[in-house]
Length: 422
Image 1 (cartoon, rainbow, N blue to C red):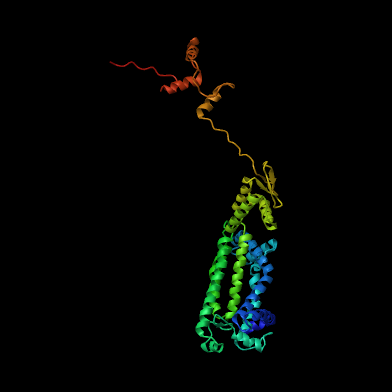
Image 2 (tube, rainbow, N blue to C red):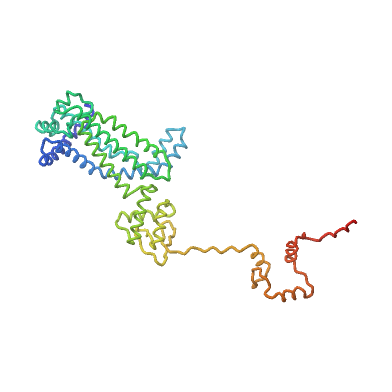
């Protein structure tokens, strides 16, 4: 660990300086030797670092979504060149270059935090070893050694011996109880963060190996934190628990306001947006207009939730425009999307002609134009008899055949019956 600490020694001085500055503020409120002053200094250090890493977090989100989009293409490359690993790697790198995607971008926040993490670990380890480091002089070192969080010293570990814990004016029971609780909370927060990402903010329409990898990490990361957490000082556990809680809250905000297309979170978001737009007749801000604009631009490539959103606006008499705005569409005017598709808000449904019975269709084909096509009885029975007896004419073609068929006789000429033998 000394080798790793020496690699990050260039950053221990800035980290110790930031902690001391926050300690001077909280020390005036809670006392310089209290656990609140030193604990809140570490929490404030985490918040400051995470605020600086927000641009990297935004880049991480974009990279993760780009990787999810590329998963079907990556799977095709793996299947096509499954026997040629070198060609497979070349095609993968070519795909990344063409799409401008970097797989390491999703790990940027964790990689950027690593120097601060090891620097803080080195600072707290020096406090436990009674060594000055950075801007922490002997007076601040003595104050930090007196600081306890719920009875556990900042520099104490779960694996420390009873003698070392007693040298820090604490008991082994207090140290192990506090560290065990913090390790459990740290692992649970990591598990919940990964779980809400997998269950709410993943495109459920595409099943890819990337989803299986993320699901595996959901169970692996908490175990890693639990195993390595017993070797972390209490101050480092405070740091890591705080950054996990920050990540969880940041993730919840992103899932609620900018969900992944095709995910359950997007379905919930578009449902809320549809209700608001239907009530007020407009979008609220630039972010909502950007989302509506992206949905309109997709055209026929919209997913199920996006089509439902557009149809909901149409039913409410509204129409989404190509610039992301929403206007009233009372007259049923059509909206032209970028792909050439047309969306009509109040277009009447096309009425299918009613299918006629078979008997009416046959009668309609037999009769000349201008006569009724339905089979009806003659209005006057006497006229029917007169027309039947006039000239002793026989009914033509289809009528005679139909009448014989109805009377139970066979079609065609009838054979004469042979005389019965007595």
